[in-house]
Image 1 (cartoon, rainbow, N blue to C red):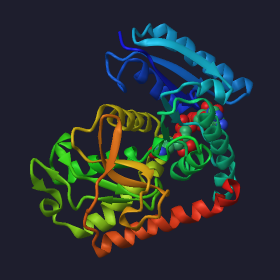
Image 2 (image 1 turned 90 degrees about the vertical axis):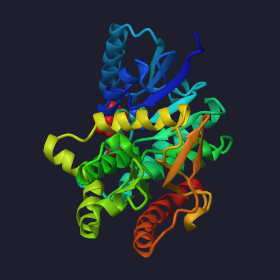
Image 3 (image 1 turned 120 degrees about the horizontal axis):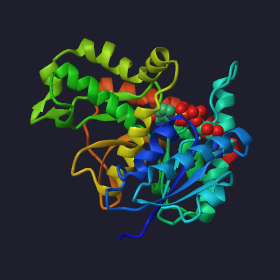
Image 4 (image 1 turned 120 degrees about the vertical axis):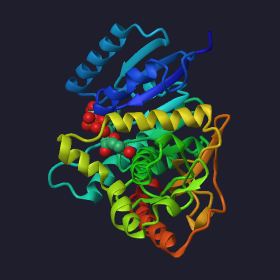
Length: 328
Ligand code: NAI
């Protein structure tokens, strides 16, 4: 039997947590031969802790053979102790009348503290995925608050956007979603993101050529992927939780077990490629192998793409400058 992997999840009693934990415990994230210990963090308020207790009772009742232990806590240093993987899902939602700036600052406090706790107690190889919004900037804050950890350990989730783009492109191009390779979502996890299908193929056929519809790209595909989250809230009355949890599992599974040469989108600290300033957490195409990701370099950027990349970068730079004083 393999040694259990310690997986910390914050916001564990929330919507995404509820869609995520059971799949992790059943082996869908790390493999059907990999035991896991879940280390679950919730807010130190009675309602959240009671809900977390209920979720843990249900985890017990599933009798998952791979679940080697569960810890529930309101203390980040307990949740992150020796964590190999940390899924930072819990975040402050936008309240009525709350400005975007206030949302950023409220979340900055959470991710400063959680970054510091990871720095202190997590495994030195911890793989961190920030799901809680604003995900890219929260990941940046956590990374900056953990000076003893490798910045490459910190990532933000753009995989839901990637999967949304895959599905829409598959329908438009009339190909199987699993056959698509070479898709990218550049930038921020926000409506400014740029889903880029110029190099996407299915069984060797270029899908941009097959679709051959620039108007669809500019006026349907890109805005629809960007605004899909809002469309789901409108339809369901609740935000996307199952698909977000699914994307988190895809992100970590590929990071740990490899993407078999496929491009996948991860929000990772820029190394200066494509003119994105070093350290900005930006959606890039990566391939993954042996627990490491590698940025796909030398993708041609045409004028249309450059404008889209500049727009999403400008938004990220604005978010970054809004929290800079907290990281000094
Ligand atoms: P939710 O409100 O149902 O659950 C969030 C949970 O986090 C709550 O149980 C809350 O008590 C807990 N929490 C809040 N602050 C915490 C803290 N400091 N420490 C520990 N726990 C804390 O929200 P849901 O639907 O699960 O979404 C979670 C986050 O994920 C939101 O920020 C949402 O915007 C984001 N999201 C990101 C996506 C992405 O693609 N990156 C996609 C969908 C959602």
